[in-house]
Length: 120
Image 1 (cartoon, rainbow, N blue to C red):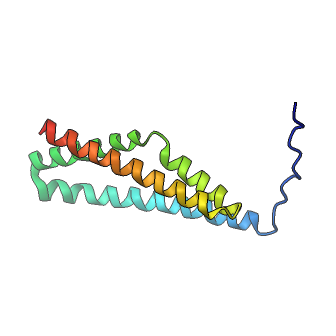
Image 2: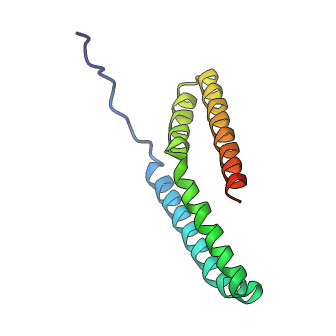
């Protein structure tokens, strides 16, 4: 049986807390900005499109949101492993992963287009 991995504990740099606070603020700002834009854009879209076209707009927006679930965690995994390979300075693995993810998303996009054509 192999011996467990005994790596040194991670040390936090002096600027970790300010950087973390900046990241949290940035994330919250983006969320708030998106909410404000959606709040003010909705009445404009309803007036501009009319009832029927607005219904189609909402339906398409909902479909796009649900299609985002079909990514099955690939985006999160790619983000995690690209960061891991970058930290390990393993650019070849990083490139292979990015290429594989691109191919997966291209195939998924083509399948979605095919399904849309068949259902139309």
